[in-house]
Image (cartoon, rainbow, N blue to C red; front, side):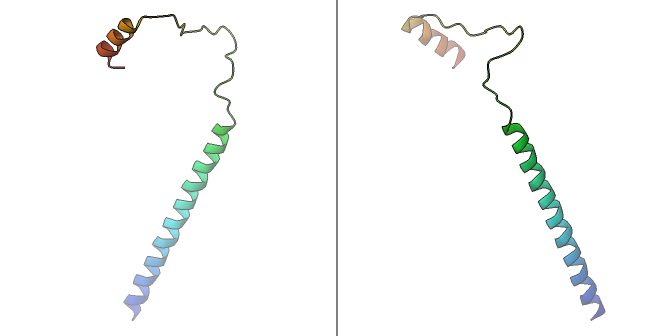
Length: 72
């Protein structure tokens, strides 16, 4: 009887620790998500930013050639 009580007690301890760690992890991820949602990723760059992509008209053959060479 005493051994059964210790097994149940240890099982409850493990369950409580597992639940506490799971809740801590969940709320930690939730807080990090809320913090990163506040950042506006698509704002205009500030400072000495340089525009990297400058589209120019390419022919269909040139675009197909790039597609087959690079696999994009």
